[in-house]
Length: 356
Image (cartoon, rainbow, N blue to C red):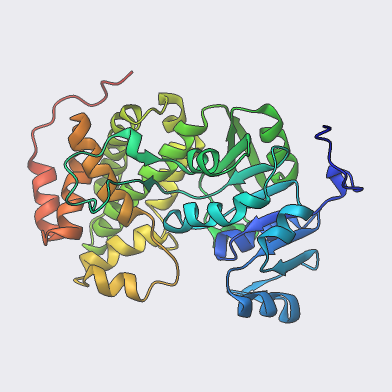
């Protein structure tokens, strides 16, 4: 039986799908819409109506080439290339709903910086005795597990939504095992204000993008305490080392952590009040409780859950991750930000770099 598609349109004529109408999803949809028709999936029908009728979403003007939809089947049938942009906590359930409508010809390039964990029945992340790599998945691995999609990629890098929306100069990495995915991502996203780099280590790029959120929370806490650039420089440099140690234990390659998706993203989010993770740390240092901070944030700060996962993984693989460990105690065990900083400054470390 022939597996050829019967669609009459060529791939270049088809719209591009974007799943997730949050800030990042909306901005990516607007960027792609400069040259292509876009179907933007929103889980809220009110958002669909707002986008299609008022041409507005979350303060963003919506490009005329964008049509909002609330139908996975419609989107999958119309689009060969799909960009999932949803929080990690909802990613697997989203893929379960999308998967019945996917075919091997579909190409998926996600932009989610978080982990998915699978725990034994009845266990929580706090109660489980060990958390190893078999229980921790990147989003590309979730896509592979839940669907027939083969050509999978990810976006990662210093991509603050507000700056992208203002068309300020920026860059990203499109990572994939497939050169066709990388070239498609570059073609759809690259512009005179947005550079797109290539990387074949998709898992390393994903892990780098996830782990940097931990250091961003810590950086926000430093700023909230009123400390200056020397302290931040120390945190970022030691945070990068910690990312490498833990990232390699989880299967990432060193190069991914030294590039745009690693150091580039780390520096950006550690210096920007526009970063949700930075904001969490800042508000913690000002004395607010975590529950209060999470309750009034409009979008997910992925770093909070990442701290939980990274702490368990570091313990299992016996990786020294001092910043992650102290931040875990601040977020979930009542340690003050001041005491965490005091511990980190007093800890006897002599070697600067020992992973190269």
